[in-house]
Length: 153
Image (cartoon, rainbow, N blue to C red; front, side, top):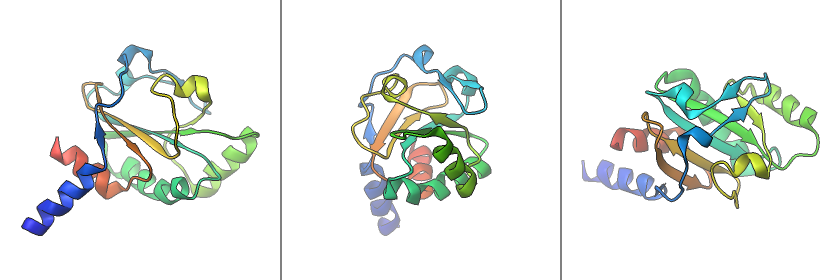
């Protein structure tokens, strides 16, 4: 039991709690299908917003875990925001190749500024089921770390 607890503490230590400020009403992303996503749309669910880029190896490493989480947990909504691209078609081909099933947003600094000044990719933001900021994680996330964080709350 102590090993499991120390492992959970190590996983949770990677999450910076409440280091960003957001008015839930200000969160509004339009995905590649034309659908608008707001925090209010997902009341009662955890919301994971992941900023990534096609050229970013850690981003690409975490995508399969985010897909798995999205497809298997109905209490979690994942939204991916593609950043730093010159051609949207390259992003869309990548989304198709990786079989990304969660909504994809074609992002930029203005869109990202709704949450924070994104200084590192990947960056992931967590909102609790009440739509309140819960944590952010700079760098790679795993399904295991996300689920441990959720389970700890």
